Image (cartoon, rainbow, N blue to C red; front, side, top):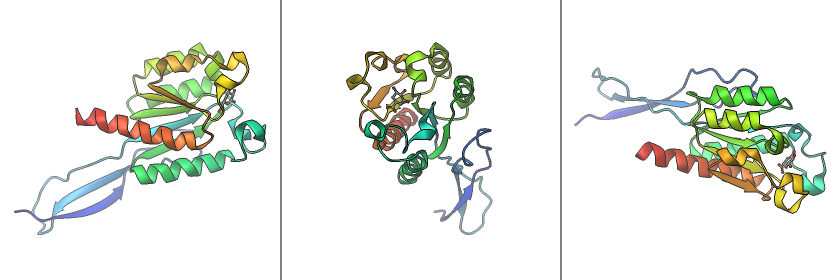
Length: 194
Ligand code: DHK
């Protein structure tokens, strides 16, 4: 019976251009026989989940705290990093104020990420281009809103993105991001098990 040793290496794979930080490295696990017999390494990559944030979310913490709370975008990123470590997935966390940039980032997820968690912010309510990009990439999508958009102005009740989303989490504050990562990881694992 072969005895295996385990080594954990950072994966190469460049992060998206423009990422706030390099993506948490996907793990490559090399399984090699301890006795050193030549065997092809088994590579197990962590799934990559893109966490994309739309306009004005860079203002979190100072922006209408009675609506969005006191957590900053850095705090949200830390919540996501901790959730990703717990779930053993890699994330690429980003924010932009530009609609076109958000569309491009969604497009880049195709053949690169296994799922998208997105807080489209106001573009959720306005952008058919963003909806089309989310439909085009053929990836599972979870939409997050920090506030309960259904308790707010009428124009916030509808989001185009929801048509592309497997699920929507809203009104649970910034912890909604961790919940979305948990749900997305479950969905990816379910899909991989098929
Ligand atoms: C954030 C925004 O910036 C708003 O435009 C949306 C969303 C709600 C949120 O709750 O995270 O209407």
